[in-house]
Length: 534
Image (cartoon, rainbow, N blue to C red; front, side, top):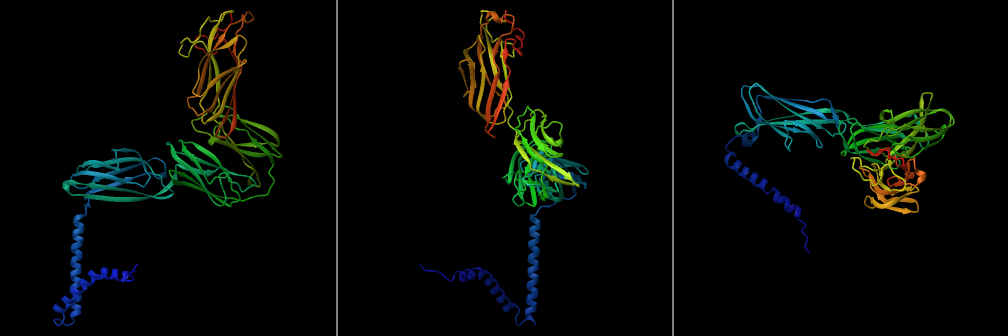
């Protein structure tokens, strides 16, 4: 294959060809019109060519200006905005003022906002280009346009721009401007809840992330920087959506780092950062044992500890009652003790963990001890009820009411697991049929569930039960035929119910119980209290 070695030379010849043609033309012009005609002909030639170049430049500028829109004359635009807080709804207002005697037609205002900005409301409404047609502006009058926006911008400065167009009489005029504002704070905040002077081995530092706005923040994530520090093995912690005014506490494990930096991110934008220096101590911590039990909503949270001297305990639980940000500081006396912490009713948030960090203060210096974390499971509330009438008053039972000796009365038993927030496996419900009570074979069960009887024990089992905000219910019919010894008493319909399952998210065993049921039918809208056998 032949190779060309003159490609660079060939290319440069091609590129220089127009320039050489121009210089050749100028050389001929100089020889014929200037040389020999003027003293110092080369100076005269240079001056003439400079004047020609200036004239050509002026012609080019005039053509450019003729094709460019001219500024909107006689109009001023003022933009007002509060201090800029990232992710916080901000109200921006543009006021257009006519300062001449002419009317301005077909005014169009366009907002030039940072990437990722979210328009919440606008008056008048904006189109997809963030523009609004303001119509005409009479002489001496004003027009106002408002927009409420969330700016997802990192700390620093933000640019707010605008463009005003006037298409009057087919001639475009425009007015542009911008304003650089500092970002003073963020609606997504992150901060350490304890700022220790030193930490002991196996300790961790509790941080708070909080949405201080009245709107949800989506795609929230925590990220950690600085040495080997982690969120117990993770360098990032996805939190999903943070609801309005909600908060979350998490632990940072320094792992020998002398400086940790935690960033709060929403929609891929870093909105706030906290930096904390770390020092370590070899001091022996007074708490020898600290244990947290898995916490189930609807029950008290329980922890036990043994301390050799008085100290303090930082506790966070997402349902902790009467506690700002669900955090409490407890004074701990020396010795063994168990604490039961009352909790608030369940919220709509998915709950993950609760934690405790012991600490003591000596000579004004705070020292953190080993931190302990435990899971918060899904709610696991179960009820059992016997009915002769539905909640709407419709009769579902059959037979005499009150029940009579020697005659059969049929009732319906309702087992219900209330709403769950995570999937369950091996969901099992067990109860015992009392003497004189049998299953009729009629039932209403959810898909993938089965009701079995072995001897006097009945079992309802679902191998895998997905999280369900509506709850899960099984109903079945029982028949009671009272015997003479039951006369004058309420007869039992079902023994105590015991429920078990495994939460798949944490592999934690859950259990619940419901009391025995009898013919008094507590909660039945029409048959309650009609249970004494005749």
